[in-house]
Length: 351
Image 1: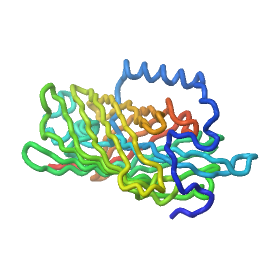
Image 2: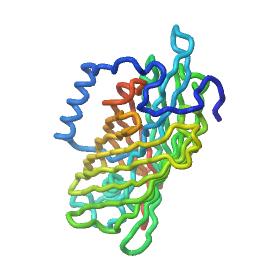
Image 3: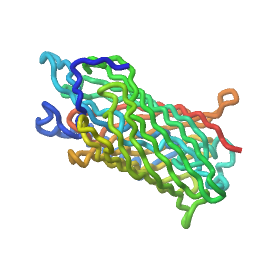
Image 4: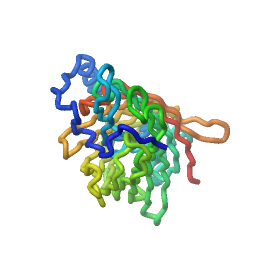
């Protein structure tokens, strides 16, 4: 799907400066300071409606460098933060926990909305998560749109244990001055996670899951992936009390079978999340999808706020959501500033 051209054949770390990245670190603007303050207030006084939608996944941090035209400068190296390494916990269900819906969440839609806040649930779901980011590149003149396809399929191993498969396959498009791949649709690298999770919550109502995570080199463009195999551990823990869900998902990926033609992967993904669900099946969620690159000693931290509603179209149950994201921290090559997120999740409740 991708064409060849001036694109570098050796992706670099998403946190690693390339070519012109030796410039002094960018000072935070007043809008960034305000955004951080708003995030703190929201975390402290989170009101009503949303669900952990996408997630996932994933926005996902990645690696790569492209040679793209720079206005007035011919060709300049631009590092594009590509969707690959980290995954966000997308919609899932109440992890086969077999517990009754909390008081006030007795309707089917409200119960499903609550379940979607749990990344290790026994609900079959197929989220389609669209993310838009800008301010990418040395001159911040590249925009990225990616659609994350994130099927969640649970398997009942026994009366006490479930295995939850979570897949993230990105479809990526760059606009602006992104070189030969401008305007193309390319697949990104796939992130596949498996969680072994108890069928019922543990002491204190803690729901958890652990297992392996794998990075599969399915990218068809130089900018859309890092073309590396990766492997590591992943885990999630959360508590659901009343309308609230609070928890965190994490994973770490290392390169495996690297032939030396691509940069090594050594990255940690962290996603703390907070979700509030209403009796009318509205949810509001706040999370970060942070990636730390150990090779470059750099963070990439998008902050996401999404509002969603579980509803029915014909005979199909689904969750529809929209929200904003802000890049609190990241490499000099971006993304920077504000972005947007849209989520549509098909739901297939088990009987």
